[in-house]
Image (tube, rainbow, N blue to C red; front, top):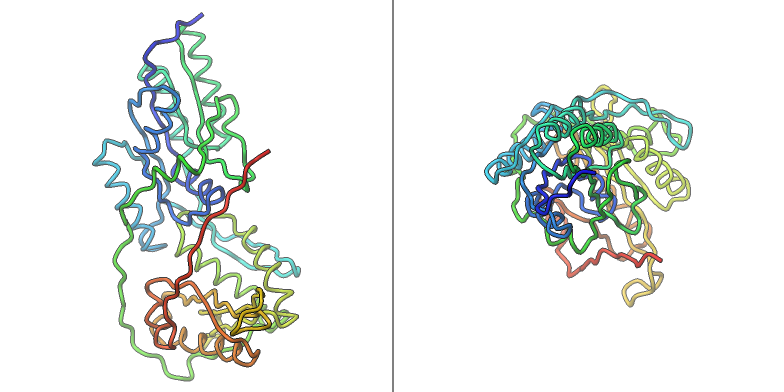
Length: 379
């Protein structure tokens, strides 16, 4: 029977994309805001282990595929390196996937794939176990492909009569569906209270750039309202552009089938009933290159809205090659005209910094809205 050491040296292995998507699902954060050294130290302290080292792994899109997230991850990885974290990155590769929507239509979406990250992480886990570099191998991942590496570590423990432990840590929120760590490891749940003490205050976002492009002739673009069964699969074009919007806003890859299914489930019935409207801007070749949408939300009666109805603008996006041509202004004007025609008393939206000048030019102003992410006790 291997002798359990009094001082247990732990090495932490972090799958950056896996952890980010788990945190997003469990806690609602929409970008990788974790402070890895602080989070690793907090978990090890809770378990009574001595943090001996950290290895961080992530896919990074090329500058050509996504300049924003390429710059973000380059800056974050550089910062981790200055704090003693060993980093490994691979270029995210994109491929087209055909996704079937709720109405039976199809749309082609790009999906980012990490190649070699899980393999490299698994190899490092096994190598460090063989070298005796640590006693605890702590995985910040729920990727079941790592179960084989955990099994190999157990074999090494038996062969060498040496105490070794493999554990996996992951966020645990009330609405997060994945409640399992890596098979064959000790599972450590990270609650919201612990995670929120380990948020990175640094901003790794690149400064916004305003590329000046020559204006197009007025006839080069047309604006068309989206119909549920409209020409050229309008809803499919809206889904495609929203996928591009979220790719630009968020990090790494996500499931385009889930996004398309939820888009279809939300937009199709509302477009048919008039509870929402959307518009596309099409270039001279008929390709949809920009979009905007507005939906009618219901709430309790207010002195300024006795029926409780209000408009919410979303999905404001223009493909990079077609920006600064006035398309966002035209689409946004359509959203406001729809809201006025419905007799709605107000319009709200959530503005990214780059979009604020446009909205302010229409008379929008910041409000005192506050938000509280809700959690519930699990019975």
